[in-house]
Length: 229
Length: 402
Image (cartoon, rainbow over all chains, first blue to last red; front, side, top):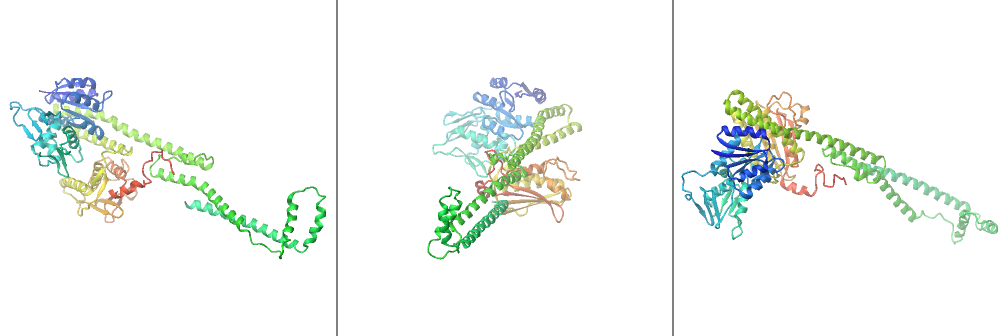
């Protein structure tokens, strides 16, 4: 049973969403107080956190910042529709994806499942199998673990999935649509900046190559590419 | 300087000139008549005056001055009417020009600033105030300026209030809407896909769209623009819109055609531009249900730096009287039974205007409606950045006119 943590200040909505998610087979814990929600998220008991950005007192973005200081638990943000600033800031802070609120619960569940599918290891598979290596970059997709030049990389699950897709196609450009479908589990929407924001965060974490270039390169009109060393 | 200034100047200066000429010629005439009248007696009166002078008490300088005149006449040569003195004439003329210019400027300048302010207000910019330009002036024109500021203030407050109300209402509707959506989803899970649960969801989607559009419009009107400015390839953008719209239109057996593609780069927010053009095409499809095709025509004016896009349908068109209000929120043309709230075109107009472009609608001679939008291309916007347009939002110094 997948454990979901819901953090939203609207208690009535929380109750309804909880019922819905329980009907869909999740185990749900609901928190209407963001500070308590952050503590819950850091317990490691939850497979995924759904976090409302628009909350009084400790707002969602600050809550996300606190969670990310200590944990890479997948976070799905609920953002105000049309509010690009919150959305981009949230993704930059390390949210795995976002849903514009108000949203249908079906949409929410679809996004949850898409994130969970790629973060939960398939049972019964040798964890060291399928190790991917290119130059100084090593990834163990089954363990959701990555190393760059011998140092562990702290990637969010979306960042990990994007890097994994690029690494599997190292040396060749991958279109934004392919990246979106494989890493985010949804087709790329026109003008959606999610991929760019996630990848620029990965780029920051990787740092520059000795020659000053970045390992991840944007290819005009084609998407992104991981350089072959 | 405007016509009013020159008129004032001409009148004042003309009046001064006439005055000067009249006074000068009067003086000159008297003087020369004086001279002529005094010439024949010559020196004798001087002799006669001499002794009489001494016993008299010191009187006003008048007679003395007059008395000196004949002394100068002692110079050899016949008495003559001298030419009009050049230096006093020129300096008087100069002073009168300066005075006339100053007066005209004093009257015309506040009127000019008032006019500019009214222009700006009529163009929708109510941030303009004329008070600072009037300075320490205290007369009827300054009162007029204060009245204008007062009016602009009231108008602005009432408009802002309306806008805020719209925004707040839509904003507040989102929380209950989110709950409603969750409840409808739950209902569907528990009771299955009954027609009634589907209908509830369908209506929620409609309200959701309306609230979303209202918020989008109120953000646009408040000048909160979504997305970053970047060079936008118009050919790619329009092709995307046309391809999508055509795909949807085909389900009802219609087509969206863009026969001659035009390349061009506009500096702007791609999402907003995409939405605006998409709204125009959707509107054409919606309001001309019997049209077999909607045509998109584009052109680029490289000299003027303008990218023009025209969406043409062959539907019933719009009443001439409705054309000017077609782009106001919630306007729905008479007889348009189509589904919608009349926000699409309003959003399109705001989005295009936020890019320094314009949008207009006209009925086609051959029937149907033509909606044309014009956007400045990247080069033109760059050169325009040096000289801000008049419709541009208020400058940071509080809308001071100069």
